[in-house]
Length: 222
Image 1: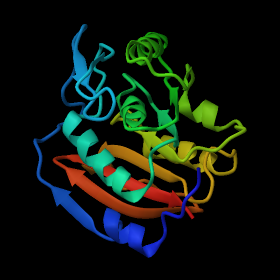
Image 2 (image 1 turned 45 degrees about the horizontal axis):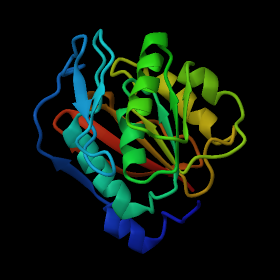
Image 3 (image 1 turned 135 degrees about the horizontal axis):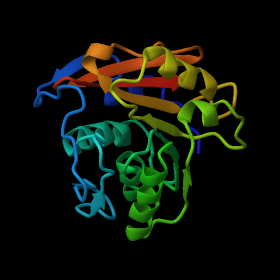
Image 4 (image 1 turned 30 degrees about the vertical axis):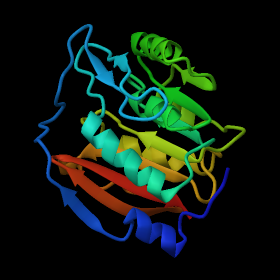
């Protein structure tokens, strides 16, 4: 499924031309640290309201409030139904599972930690989703290898302490290795203090939105 997200009407509808700060509760560092047995919730869609497990030991899933705003903007920008979604730094899988709940056709999750990857598989199975693939690998390693089919949307919620250079290496591998194609969206969540990602060509920055001290950065494969 391919579309032109650079179309002027789409850009205007999704607000890609602006930089807008949305007030929100402060998130210092890795906010909302989870204990064993903690859960988060799918916000909307076919399994909206269902709970999923969160990996222990300080995992910081995207908050429900940020996910709600992110996917509202995403569904205004593109047709999510049937889309192929890549969820880097999967953790609980909250981002990719939210996409599936809202109609995405396939999601691949990348998670380096073995236990977190196992939990992610359980979460996907408990929600009854098909078309799910979980890769237990470092994002930088996997993205450095070619893939046969590109993704329509790439979602990345890396650890807040991930070095900017490490993130850039991941972003740099997306295009030459076929993970994205013209029209693909790349969305990165980071702490505001980390600044905007250094987008390598042909990834073109579209917008940044702030939610408290979390920033969500959008780019398109132009």
